[in-house]
Image 1 (tube, protein in one colour):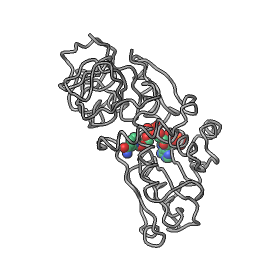
Image 2 (spheres, protein in one colour):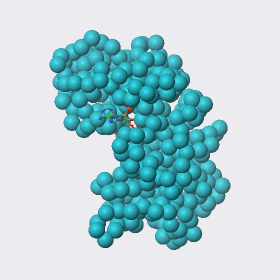
Image 3 (tube, rainbow, N blue to C red):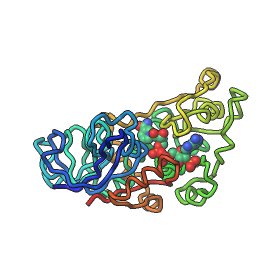
Image 4 (cartoon, rainbow, N blue to C red):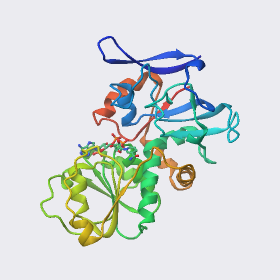
Length: 328
Ligand code: NDP
């Protein structure tokens, strides 16, 4: 038996989450069974603990889109009992049972080995949020970004992706301008390495002028919406924006001008089904380049039982940084 956070449909069509025992025979099919040590809380997890957000189709459901732990049993030659592994993405915790359980079973292709020098807890302090921030930086660098070109903007900076992006960029020598709607998060963001705090209101509003003064050498955007449209007009010539999130909305009232007159690039980032080699490279770079000591102050710990409450908080924009779930 394994302890798990199980979400069930109630008779009135609502959902209810509680910690229960599940049997190993209830786990979905897969070649590798993992004794989960840590998981995380992401916005998607909060949806999957509640209505399902259109992602969960079958109840009872075990959420948890990320986990790290130790292989308990493997039918795949790439993994053996005792190996430490990480899983992010592949719709685990959405379309199938995920990491909010002491045991998880998945396909071997979806796992990556835990990089040397990283603990399973550190891997989950990073989680999908940090992995996505790394993918965004890799994409920006592939399009010519390097330190010394000027300020790099991070929007939604006090959130999960934004916090890791800030620490990652600053650790690599980039000058980070962190956009936040929470004035009280200023000290926190400076401790992560932000050189400047940009109040959210400064980038709010509709695009009055399609091109404003050139300000940003690059951008990791977690907000989308009107803010993305606005900041595109403030990018330096040939600079790139990595489009990660839509915390501020999916409708982007775009003007084409920044693309045509400044050669600005908009790069899509999708973390769910990244090919194996790129996933391994990104995780190894996280292990070598992300200052883990900077990460620790942004982490709050919780157990399975606290998750429903914290899930409601993240949906309301009330979580700062990362939540690591100790599943053991
Ligand atoms: P969080 O909820 O932790 O952070 C989002 C942040 O965005 C908030 O902390 C807040 O930052 C800011 N924000 C929230 N609402 C608004 C608003 N209305 N206008 C402007 N800013 C706002 O989420 P994550 O960091 O985990 O994820 C960020 C986004 O990235 C989400 O949309 C998520 O779905 C997406 N995502 C995409 C992935 C991909 O593969 N492309 C992978 C992972 C996440 P502050 O308080 O500093 O203002």
